[in-house]
Length: 420
Length: 153
Image (cartoon, rainbow over all chains, first blue to last red; front, side):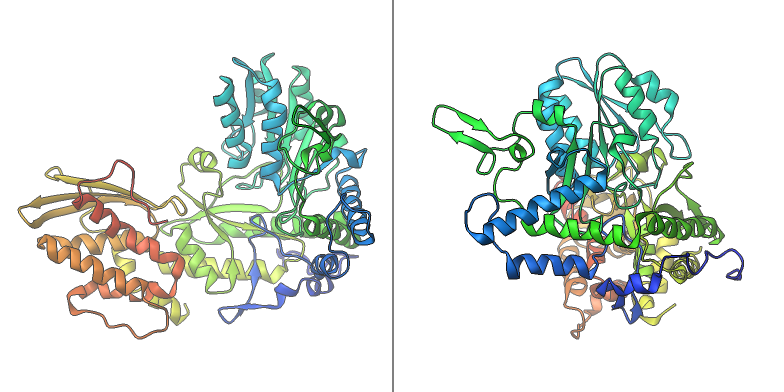
């Protein structure tokens, strides 16, 4: 292995106290197979700071009640917490109005909501839905289902050998029949950051609605939906340092108001008779049933935490680690990067000659290093690069420079074990 | 390399992964079946030539992790020329070996022979399916093949 001195990322970033940040995440102190945990599977889920765990516990210990249903004190408190969380999410996304934020279980549910409520009303036979070749199955399958139901056509914009969307093709494949363009903010398989603003402008020019899968965007990049120019943006709380089962769909008010309900039930009506039901205005129209109250509150706590340590600084630190890993990984014998996009966030995917990703994953696991091995729910991306699977390391701001060293040392060991 | 990993990746397994035996199509096959683990992408196609009550010849094609490739390679070596009923009981012996509880003493039946190198797999629960995929696929081939690929997910 080469000397660690010159090329390594700086150990610190001014104004960012890494060890203090790490101390906020209880799980980072644990050991796996006798080694310190090196958690590099942040694109699958991120770890949660103590502030999130405490916020969840506090809901149950102090204010456990249903929301928007009671006149008693606890119900009012729970409602205030829940609606306060909505305002926090709106601020986090740069949204103009908290009423544009619908709480959902995660990105998948947010996209399914758009496909079912907006898509069913707007997409007809012969229409087109445009996606990119980078999409996670969650931003592909719901649109496929919609197209199959409506007799519409799913149009896929190709990606190039670097893993960037071919923008000339993006522009060319848009047509007056394009009703919806659904794009990832950041690719979960390759780390590619899409030029969402340009995509939005191009899609709007043909009158299409732009839906963004923000699962990997919200946790790793500053998000401003106004600047992105999109019409809808969905993200997952559990990938954004919050609890699983939390997440949000933001959509422009005109869209939400034009959308019929997605699920029926309590909490989404103004009046019900056997003959007719009147629905609440958005966002509550789309939140039938008792919501995951503590999940929404936990997500807001995660956002507060992120803003407390500084989103820009955290992102800058994470980027320094990622750039360091991307620069040094090719020194491992037989390692090939899968995807070398112009701009990348959090994620680096690779293959190791002679070693299947699952074997690499097992070797790393025994060293306490958690990575993802597989197709990353993006089988078309794997097919594009002619590989059945990759090993993926994905970073968060709480990772340390010596964790990049540990990853590279583990990969050297794997390369040696499986060398022919 | 830490010692516990070498329990899983025994030299025999690494060798069969690098140079799989009985790899390729078998023109004389009268039974075939496909196996697939959607979660990890392991894929195997088995070609079996059964004559009377004997596995006359057997071969496989596929791609996957070292455990699944070595399992298919060593399995085909073991089954070649074996009476079908013995092959069935070998399946059961192998299955017991890799699914017995981690940490508990395990008796390795002599008839498993070289297949005993898979004893370490039981300590890696997520990898058990890799080792058993070719065996389940073999069972499906004997049963006449399945329209859908066998899955050990």
